[in-house]
Image 1: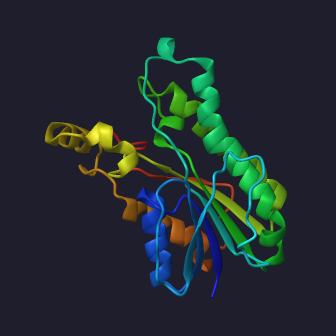
Image 2: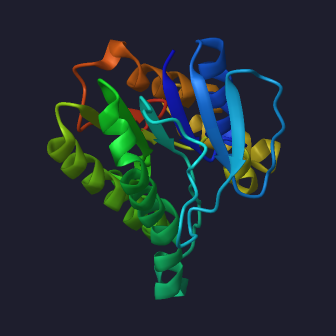
Length: 232
């Protein structure tokens, strides 16, 4: 069985990924920050971790891990004129520097595995311009650059890819989907006429961790209901 570390597995896409990997016989080591999770699964364990800490305690991991999924993110939508430089830095620290710190901390364990995979998260907003999305686009654009650079540097032993979703029906986007009217309007913006789910993304994560994607690296893969490629 493969060992996979999921950073931020207590909610949304992270939680859906934990559930899917459990069903597919992975050994899952998942972290949470504030939303504590108790599990009785013999193949899954949850550990509290703040990626902003100076020293990351990952002593619970085995000597080799086959996959890393970094889920922490934020959705802060404001006019550019109202965003302080500190706001950009806060997002970068959570989504980019946090990912960098974790990857560096487990790199030796990823290299110990025969072939391993890193999965990061971008956003449709990083490649497709939306009003009030500059804060999102800056951090996710950095993730896309990191994906491409690391995939080149770590090949052929470690594959690195990113998933770029559109709006998902998760707690992270709850304010954007707080009424039936908002749900209908957001669904209509997508060519497939629905809002994405955490399970939609978890299935792509599992694919990128598996041998089925063994010839895929350095990619930013849109899973966005057609938003980034089609006009309806």
